[in-house]
Image 1 (cartoon, rainbow, N blue to C red):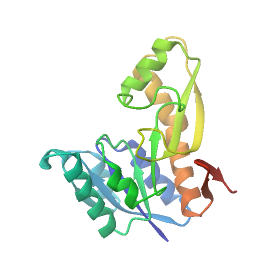
Image 2: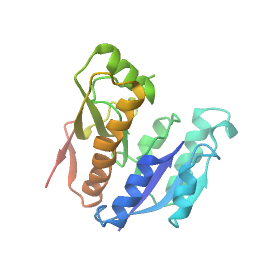
Image 3: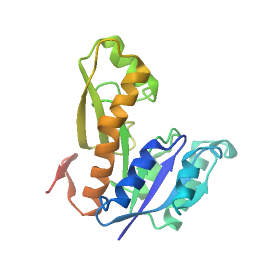
Image 4: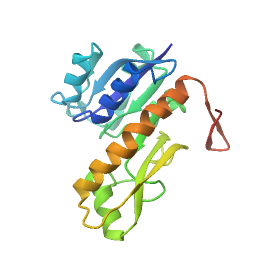
Length: 208
C-alpha cells in the first residue's frame, strides 16, 4: 500500500474529493496517511481530522525563507514515508530540494489546460480571470508531476470544461472543480498507486 501525503493551504475541496474516492475504493493501492497544511486555520485540517487522517501544520511564516521551509517540508515528508505527495490547493512555493527528494512522486492539479494560463502568478481565480479575458471556449484542469519549473512537469491527465456565456471567474472555477479537478485528481492518484504511469522523454505515459 502506498502512503499518500496531501499538501493543503485552504478549504480542502480537492482533499475531500480524494477522501471520498478512497472511501469508494478508487485510489487503487494508495491510502491517505497524512495531511500537511501551510496555514494553521486551513479548513482542510478539519476535513482530515473528521476522517481520522493524521495532520501536520507547517506554517510558512514560521520560516525565514523558501529554503528553510522546503528543508522542513522535505524532512516531514520523509518522516511520513511518503510514496506520493499531492498538492491539493497548496499555495506555498517549495524549492528544488523537495523535487529532488521525490522525483516524479509529487503531483499537482492546475485549473486550466496546460500550457495555457499556467506558470508564475496563475493560481486561484487569476487563472479563470485570464481565461475569460482571452475569450476561450474551453478551459479545464490538468494533473501534472511537480518539477522545479512551475506548472512545467509532465502532464498526467487533462479534462476540458465548457466556458459558458456570462461566466464569471467564480462560476467557471466552480464548474472546473466539479467537472474536472475532482474527477481527474483521484484518477491520477489511482494510476500512480497502481504503477500505471511511467515518465519517458519528459512525458508521462499511462499504461492501462
